[in-house]
Image 1 (cartoon, rainbow, N blue to C red):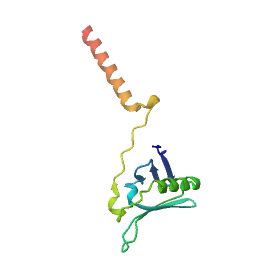
Image 2 (cartoon, helix red, strand yellow):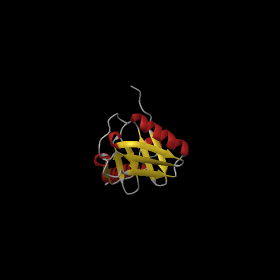
Image 3 (cartoon, helix red, strand yellow):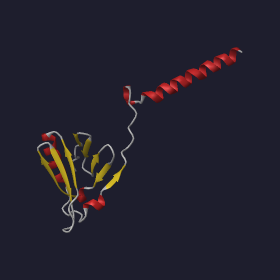
Length: 139
């Protein structure tokens, strides 16, 4: 089995991610997780990408668009997702999509990938404890 490389497509404040499983669309106010079975097709045109969900004949399909993306990246993204689509899609893709508030930002990491603020706080606490221990033994 060949691993699918992780693809990230940025456009404005939106970020699309695909790594072989569900497509994730992150926007400032929402994060959508779109299972492959929910997708009818992905269309790249110029500097935009549209993810069109499956829908019954009576319903209009839900479409997620991301504009102002890299044109070459848009084509690669559309080709990769299209190649991974299942042979039998779900009849109502919108029902499979989960939407939630975006995850909180991770703390900025310093050298070695360690968040620096908790390290500074721990060092300050250790220095304070050592100072108190020295004062207690002198007194």
